[in-house]
Image (cartoon, rainbow, N blue to C red; front, side, top):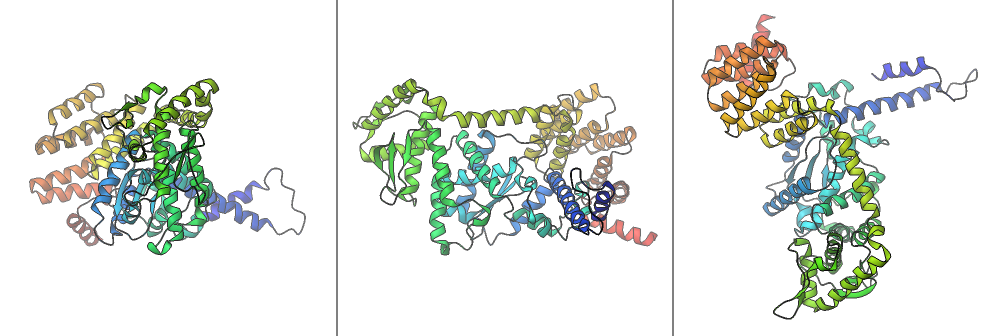
Amino acid sequence: MAAALAAMVMLSGAPCGMQRAEAGWDGWDDVIEVVSGTLIASFQRTQLLALGDNPAVQAELCSQAEKENDGRPDRRAVILTDGVMTRLVEQGNYALKNNSLPFRWRVVHKKEFNAYCDYSDFVCVYDKLVKACHYNEDELAAVLAHEMAHGYNQHVARDAQKTILADVLADVALDQLDVASYGVGRQLPQALVDFAIVKNTTVASEKRADESGFYTMASAGFNPGGAAAMMARMMYFTEHSSQVEDFFFPNDHPDTRVRRDRMAELMTAYGIGHPTVGQSQETLGDVYFDNQFLLRAEPEDGLDEEEMSYLIAGGIAKGFHDHETFEDWAFAKGADGTVGFAGDAAAYAPLRRALAASGKGAAFQAFVEQAYLDDARTGARDKWLKDEREHEADVEKERAKQAAAAEASPKKAANGDMYLELGLTNFAEKEYTRAKALDEENPDASCGLAMVEGRRGHHAQALAMVDDVLAKHAGNAHALVARADIHRHAGDLDAALADCEAALAADAGTVAARRIIGELYDQKGDCEKALEAYRAYHEAAPEACDIPADYMTMLVDGIVEER
């Protein structure tokens, strides 16, 4: 491949605008090497994007991460991460590109302060990180939203300056990156597994992930002070790195103090400019409202006063962002004489506790009331939310662009099929739903959703859905295979076999039908016919790795004997 690319450069002559080489100039070899290297890197990036849209690759990377466990993951960390990631994925505002997979995640037991998102949108979280954050959901949300931003922005594959491509993938033959060969059961080259867990994004991408991640976590309802609090926690470990085996990679990230200050700026803007936090040694932990001292934060649940000050200020920011009028706060005096406000979001809890402990509820109410009067006069809301609104407009523009690409529908439906084969019904449903949203008339998407219902035991509903497709697309091989799948899970193996045979009659290239026939005969206990079906499947799809091991052994032995 490299030679072919180099030859292509040689045949094309000097690039336009480049000075012609004088007689005796011998620099063309260097030029060819650089240009061909760039083309190869571009090819690798293209292939990584495609690999990242392959459920079998994602499943393999997930499996590899689980093998890294040094023991049983911390149960509390698993539960918290599941809750935070689910909320970010379902409620966060971001645009997932058509050639990206839905996010999957795992918590593994490692003594390192780390998390990463690989090129397949698989997020791996080390439980040491969750414990080091004292199980605070807002700090964890900041980390996970940052990693998600790497995923939906496709930073791993798209970053242009990637010495990592040359260093890590140097031993991977380019044909090994062929995405078509990666089906269920196929193992990735170790270099591609290693590449997934290496910090390999540029500083610019890290900055973008910080900012995109901030808006994602805030839009999902988390405390907007959580990102700055997390940076403060990271600064602590910068100074106490002996407390973890591995912290983070400073050469691949902006300076942590700069990141903290930027996250604090975003929090303040989110709160229409009102909440700020002291950052000098003397004012550390102080919370200000319009530059007036409000209260001093106290350490709580393992978080120090600086972290708590950001979470308290974040509650103020969320209130101003979400409430367009003073009345929306619904301030009221409680039976104990303290002043509180409405809203049961957990993001407000640090602010509530701090106001109650300091007795500053009434003063805070007065500050808030005056702020709305001032904001109405100065137009502060439009000014401070300008960047967020531009970000939201960009997200909506990208979402509309993806939604208009109907040509991506078949690949999403194929991904759904692969997720089903992997036993991941919920993820299959996500991809089939995306396929149908892209093209309402895609029969494969409708059949896929029917198979999902069949896997969930809703057999009558599933069969009716497939029959609707067959009424519009008579003899559709994929629909017949889908109906066979539903019959199989309903226990009607003979009906399933009949549909598979009908699918092959309609389209002899329907290789999935051959595999299912093998599985059906195996279920019926007819090993001879199962082997015959698997032989036909193997001949039709020699790269397939999902033939049961005992049958594969018999096939290999048979092939050897024939030779």
